[in-house]
Image 1 (spheres, one colour):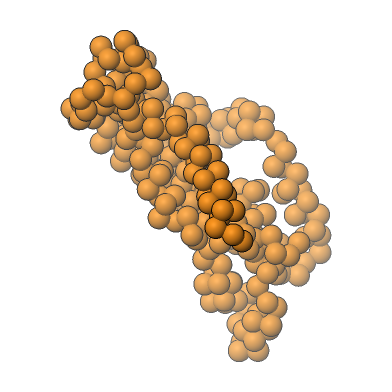
Image 2 (cartoon, helix red, strand yellow):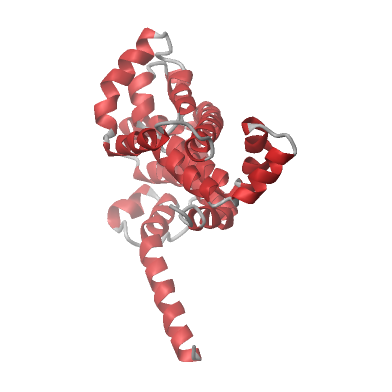
Length: 272
């Protein structure tokens, strides 16, 4: 490829990247402006960076409490999803039993169901077993698996050479031994991808907190930010500062895990 072709391709990619990053750039810019400048010209860059907007936004709500609740939810949900989905995916692709193909088709079919359909029966179930208004109301269902994550991990597990598993069986390993000693260590990219997806999903989960939580001491950041909008909707500079702080962890996590994430996605469809 010639230098001009590379220059044109990279230039186009940079341009597209800037277009997608423009909302984030404007959000950061607005968070550093005064209320007067925002009302006068919201699309301009700050005349003088108002870094005090960030500590003021933090002190305007129980940011530390919301962050702690969010981290507890994220860690619990990541553990639940990676553990349950990996076990189910292994059973659907590496353990021989009658009807597993039909079960896999049923699992895939549940991906067509919108969350709103499951909302009422799940709420009734959560209430009946006494988990309403607790963080376990959000963490608990992740230990029951997720159709998309199961499908993703199954596709990756299929790509693991059967010869490795046969060697493990010769050494006396059963299905659990094969799973923990061979499949899991070789599936780090796929498991990291599931963990990243679940982390982002839990971090941004507003509906779960709205549906299952009523105690303000248990609210996560997503729901706390919505309450912040209700209380400080007229102070746009503080709202933008809170939104930036809410977004930064997701950006950091993605950049730290992007190599593993891309590897997990690209290798999860090698075999069908």
